[in-house]
Length: 299
Image 1 (tube, rainbow, N blue to C red):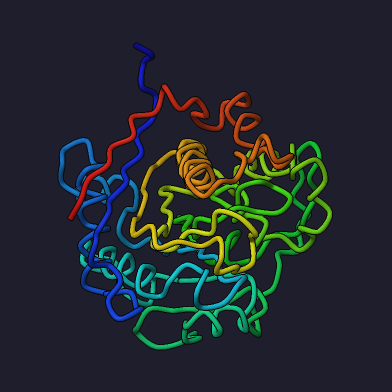
Image 2 (cartoon, rainbow, N blue to C red):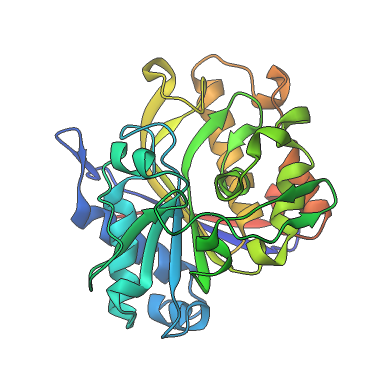
């Protein structure tokens, strides 16, 4: 048996969607159960105390490109923020963010930059913008959002699970294309090795402490946009401290859904998610499914 190098927790709930809407109380419960299972002690706050020291400012990087149906849901993002607040962080020190205000708003988020409540804003929010320094590593040279570089101490990478017409998978690695000024430059060859090279930067990987997938609704073909024909209510959330391992499990879920719906796996359709293996080979995380402890639980 292969030695397990990473742990991924999948929490499923039959009642997460009620009347077509996500149940915030159930979202909170799913995240709590996931963090308990991810924690070495079985207690979520033991893990959170290790990952997020108090007095830090924490950024929750969501993905709101598509709109309300196929973006990281506010119910999930704010539930995670609430758990971090209960850990002891001030609400104003938790920032939910993405690249553009209009995308956040369309996905159901309220822009908030002041006050004692959770903050929610974007790189294009007035006064934010990109850091002046050019960050570069191998094939990537980009300006990076000041939310990533200056305004947060730690980051939770929180995309929504969907496939991507070029990258194969729009996941944790791809979510960081939303923090740079020139992602259009890095879509050749299934976005490889650009995703791995960007993730290699200490200002990116060094700040990421937790990775979470909103997999309540999954787009298994036709992404990154929303195509109802190829979307399904998967009713899950996935958590890991290893974003590469999380992407590898997410790829497996996408391929299983594609097979169940009569579609070829991504690799066989010309959209292999190459960057996962590239990242694994670079030592950025575990990309081998048989070396990942994938625990599935129900609430």
